[in-house]
Length: 396
Ligand SMILES: *Cc1c(COP(=O)(O)O)cnc(C)c1O
Ligand code: SF4
Image 1 (cartoon, protein in one colour):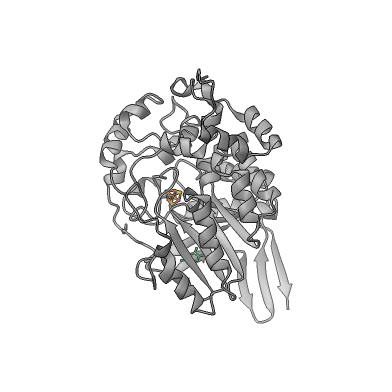
Image 2: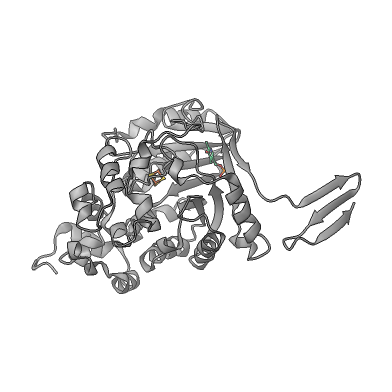
């Protein structure tokens, strides 16, 4: 504990950011003080998302206070500067297994030298997002919906990030006018009924800035539906404050997609963040990237999907890891993903079964791939197999 006797303005804001019930459950979830680096941190600072951001681990020396670095990691950290530099929230650091170089949370956060290896089919922008950008910050691929990249910053930089060409710690304009062209484009395109705000991570922006953007888009009459893509409930759950949730609630229907990759990410603290969103009536979905050695075993993926349902997050997509430069060490064959889908469908609740997709390189969009259940198809007759391999004939 700090010897501070006075509560700072920031700490006061944190006290006010949660209801009393939320604050009680948060207190029960705090065990960060076990890590010596954080043993003197005041719980009100720990719960302040700005404090978490400011104290992210950015250097090899800081990280070495938390884990014993391997030589691959040391070399990787040295190379990871500029775009997708290393940044690890103190919260995430407490979840890393200090003795296991293969800890799934560690591998997602700590650069390794393999990131400098460029695989044979890897590209800077495999999904051709830059080509399909009709206005700054906007990607328009499908007829009725657009992707708005609101920021290039995130709480933590995932080593497998598909937008590593954009995302990282660099100066970026935060003038509201930077979205003018994107908003104008959406306004003038009456076919656009769905706007997905992503990035980077939109929840890295201040509440007022997010609200301003949401307000501008939701006031367009043909926009029926807004969604936000974020990883903060997983990497920085302190970001989900009562104030943020109260603001978001005003803009219903608004859906949130959260990036989850491993069951260990679903901590008590993460559950509180998701509960706050779900209690506000915000539907939650998950997006998962299939990652070698992290979640490429069917039993781990199944456990992740079950844990997600328990915190009211509906599994939405599993992505084949895009062929982005420097991610070869994370990529599995497509057959691994298909086998995972085979082990899910029928074997567990349908709600626990997401769709496995490959984003078509060159801008094809998300293409579902999965086991084949149609054995033969003739006029008026389908021969099908079920999840156990038993064969059934359906006559039309
Ligand atoms: C993923 C994505 C969307 C949203 O796709 P859904 O399948 O509707 O979730 C929209 N635009 C782009 C460019 C995308 O990559
Ligand atoms: S949160 Fe998303 S955008 Fe940010 S680094 Fe991770 S994968 Fe990339």
